[in-house]
Length: 274
Image (cartoon, rainbow, N blue to C red; front, side, top):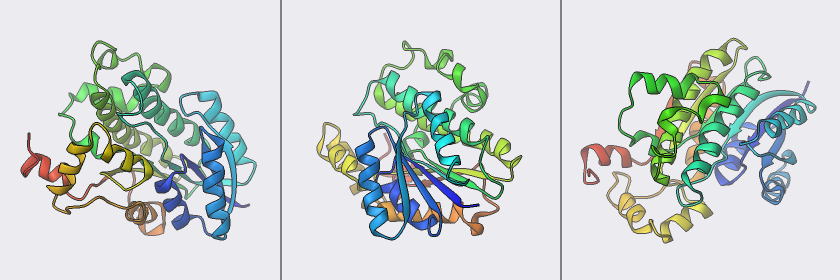
């Protein structure tokens, strides 16, 4: 049976990871906008990969389930790359929580029911989740284990509690890492693994918009004062993802990897400290 790689949100990071793990496999590229998936497919097809496209709305469980069924027609789903999401400058708090938090929970639940033995997944979270102040053990457990359909009804996520888009984003990304930790236990019952990567600023069209947008000065300062002194590249994220998703990462599951050039280190212990 053919092996299938599913890429949800095939932007530059999703494509870079796919190129590292998809040789000899069938790739299914899914995006909210079909034209985005088709552009990614053209790039991969021209590079010798076998790729098809479809649409998905991660905030809609039926849509995610349809993606699972579509991908399953092509073979055994062995790799899931979840790189879809919205940033603090793209949407209001409610939409960020719905797409980035609830949507990720749904993806993990739905693909966790079909992932093949020996399979693996990676979720792209964010450095932002690491700069959120510590939550209580009860809040951590709630974000990690509350069934997806009840997740947005948690009191800590009520509209009067989350009024800022950055706060919503930080909570969503912290929730992604916690969720993956809990889901790793469930995925293990199928002999599969799942991890998160939390990138810092990685140069993509979206990042370029952010660097020149309303928050641009803050982001540029963040890079200048970080230990690395620069932004990252999609290929640097893909290098770690390939390790996590391949045989050399067989002992790694339920973990979160911070790839931010030291921005978070500088935030807590360096020149970026508040």
